[in-house]
Length: 225
Image (cartoon, rainbow, N blue to C red; front, side, top):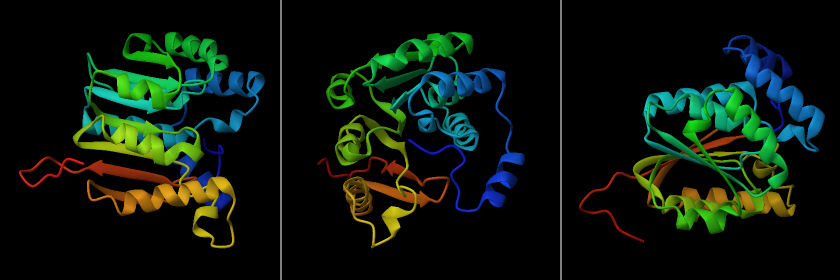
């Protein structure tokens, strides 16, 4: 989840928005309808984040992409738009109330054939998925981030990328004075990744913080844990 428009400097935010390819009509409609119908519309990702996801997928050219946290489908559409022919996005959300709206916009975007939308608990669904993934995007319950990470990493190809949103948590993760429950869980996740020998990672101050994690390529010395 990320606040639309969250940046520490509104002038920088405006400048970045003005120099990023704008949302098309479908995404603008989705934003408007989400704001009208959903209790927490701030859970939408921003245009800049969406464009980043599309470009990342285009650059990697994956066969399979996994998303945890569909909400109303904005980020799923952005991920699916970057997919090559015959590639698939599996997106999972545990809230059945978002299903109709998300499916509506998957159809309007012409991407429903590329998107496998599953309603369920990701910690139960992911282990049963009979496939490996080239890219994963995690934007779900922050208190379960460490568990999501472990589950998803097992399903990644060697060299695959995991992108995780909101790991600065409005800057609180970096502020030692902040110690609420979610902040502690995000710090736990950040430490887990930082000390995990199976991956390399970079934390970027993009909106509410984005961690990009790469599962190390397989070598003869690779340790299976």
